[in-house]
Structures are given as C-alpha cells and as structure tokens.
Length: 381
Image 1 (tube, one colour):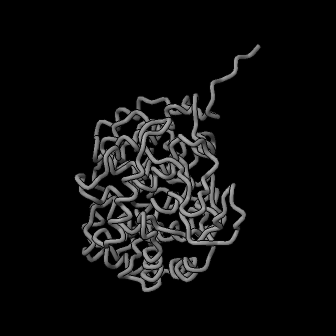
Image 2 (image 1 turned 135 degrees about the vertical axis):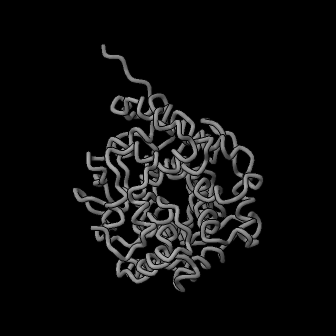
C-alpha cells in the first residue's frame, strides 16, 4: 500500500496515463513512491509527477531528505576543497562530483550550511587572467620536475565546477559569468567535430593522455550539465554541435574512439552516480536538449539502456562504485529505486520533447548494437 501521508493528488498521479511509461516493461511510479528512499521520492514528485517545489508533498519529502541519516553522513564526509588533493576526476571523493549528486537530491546552499561552505570554496579559486576555476592538484607535467600540489586546473575541473555553480543558482555571480566566458572560448573544432579538447592545464601545462586533437567526451558532458538552465541566447556558439559530437562517439565507435573512452560492456552498463563516462552519463547530459534527443545516437542509447530493465521495470545495478555500498545504487543484485528513477527521468524528458521517440526506439534492435574497441575489425585469414 502507498503511504497515506501523500495527498490525493499524488495518489491519482501514480495511476495517471503518461506516454513515457510505454518505453518501460512496467510502470515504476508506485514502486518509487513506496521505496522509502527519501531522495528518490523527492525527485519523483518533482521530475516524474511534475509537482512544484512549494507543493505540501514536495516540502514534506524534502524535509525527509534533509533528515535522512545517509544524507547527513554524506554531507559530514564531504571532501575539503582547500586541503584534499585531487587524485582523479572519476573519484567519488572528488568534491564537484559529491556536490553534483547532492544538488540532484535537493540539497543546496539554502538548506545546508556545510554545502554552502563547500560550494563557496569552489568559487574562491579562480585564475584571474583566464577565469578558469582551479583545483588543488599534483601539478606536474612531462617537462616539469615540480611534483608539489598546487592550484591548477584542466577542463575536467573547470567545466564541471562551472556547471555545478549554475545548477546551484549562482548564474548571476560575476565569477560564474567569467567561468562561462572561459568555457565558451574553449569550444573548438576537434577530430570528431566541435567540442572541448583536453587542453594543457594552467601553470603546469599537464595534459591528459589522449590524442591532441580528439574531443574529450567528459568535458562536453560537464558543459552540457549546466548550460541547459540558461536561455538559448546565452549559449556559446556550437554548443549543440558539441553535443552531437559527444553522441557521435557512440555512432562511430566501430572505427574510432577518443582515448580511454570506449563503448564496450562497461560503458553500456549504467553505473550510478553518473560521475564518469557511461551510457547513463551521456543520456543524462543530453536529455535537456531537444535537438540532441532527436538524433539517432540518442535513440539508440535509450534502446540499449532499456535492455538492463527486468520485466517488472525495477532496475538492478550490475556495475557499482563500492564507495556507495550503503546506497541502493551501490548494491549489485538488488533493486535500486534511485537508478530506476534516474533512467525513468531521462525517458520522460525524451518523450516530452519528442513523442515520436517511443516508436523510433521500439524499432531499434538494441541487442544487435554491440560495443567496439574503436578500430576497424581485422579480417580473418
């Protein structure tokens, strides 16, 4: 039975006919509301039921998020941006990744003092000349003997930090405007099309291991995460083309691949939280842009992601971060309400933007869309 603490309006919405459900084997909404997972219930009310933030049910759900021991413990253990050395942008302990997840759960500067302190610490460190946000990293390059941590930055830092500040409501801050200007300036033509390359870091000149002219898929993902909340007239030139470049990494997976960003089994298994490159990360980053939703690549990725749903429509993770073992999405072989919600939200956004996507996805033979190592197949002798 659905908890009677919800209003009649919510009870009715659980059974309301909506088109996006047609993509899934079963309707997950009742399960999500009954899950007992505070942040999943909160986001379901807002993103799947379209209730406003001032609705009594939403206010009550948000209160439960703030009170949840898992959330309180998560916030208590936030990384210290001033002291903790960045050891990897795909790490659960990387502060921007932590804040991005908390924002999705409804935590912001107004609701939590420690979150406010952490978000402010991101804004404090910005290169005066370029406007690029900085991170405390081991800033040595191939030509340098200096291996001491210093305040430097690569686009994996800057693009994500800028998007997080946008999502946190700081778009009118002068430092964020400078960060946006910097991000827009760095869109360029790559070997795959318009996008962001892995450019050398500030001060250290360190650059990632990829080919110089290749697009960096994660730099594109991190930019798309934030730009959607701005009016289109404030988007940089070639933003949509950059999103198409990101999606075309999937389409062209058999003949090329940006270094370390493959499309095999690991990519095809949605792995939450979506802090690094996989199918869920790409779909989530592109779901706000109708021009990207209507592409063949987006439709194929939707079809592939649906293969992971069992007949009851409740997602069971097959790939997890052990750091999140206390959360439903950190447990293999168990239903994860958050994962079920997260992917359902992508499907809803897609159908809302383009109802024709349902028919298009159902025509796709997803099982035939195999991964690839990124090069032409060798002929058998």
